[in-house]
Length: 256
Image (tube, rainbow, N blue to C red; front, side, top):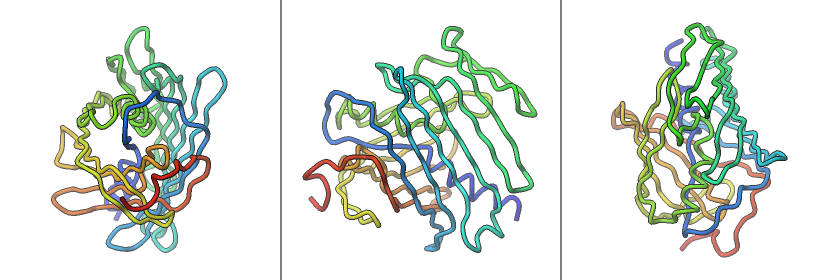
C-alpha cells in the first residue's frame, strides 16, 4: 500500500509539472497573478486535487507553487501531501529558477529537498536531503515545477512552428531530458467550459512514461486537461475545475 501511495501521488505531481501551448507567435508578456485547481482522476473516480498559483513579484521576479493531495476516502489510502515551490527571475528567455523547494508530508516516506541554482557557476546544489548532491547545469535548465511557465513563454515566442521542444530539468541529482511535441488541434470539455486546444505529448527520454496535455490559448496557454500514461494504460487524469486571474481571450473559447 505504501508503494501504491507513492506511485499515485507521484503521478499527480509529475503530470502537474507540465505546461501549455500557443496558437500563433507573438511577443511574450509574463502573465499576471493567477491560480487554478485541478481534479485528479483515476479509473473514473476523483481521488485528489492539485492547486497551483503564480505570483509576479516586483523586480521581474516570480513565485510559483503547487499543492497536491488526496481527497475524500482516498486520503485513507494515499495520506501523503506534496508542496512544491519555485522562486526566481523573469528573464528574456523565460523563467530562471533560483530556489526550488519540495516537501512531502502525511505518509511514511516524508522528505524535503531544496535546490539552489548558481547561474554563474552553472551548478545546482541540494544540501538538506539525506543524500546531498550537486550537479552541473546548462543555461536553459529549469526545475521540475516551473516548466508550465517556461512552456508558456517558449510557445508564445515561437508559435506552432515550435512543433518540438527539449527541456532539461534538474531533478534527483542529475539533469533529465524531456521531449515535447505538438500533435494537433482538438476540442475538450471541462467544468470550466469547452475549449479549443493544442494536444501536446511529453516524453521522458529515460522511461516509457509519457504525458498528454490539452492546452487552451484562450486561458493564456494553460493546460485544461492532462493525462499520464505508463505501460500502455492511463494512470492518472487531471481536469481544470476552477481558475482565477487569467484573462479569457475573445473568440478562443468554444468549438472550432
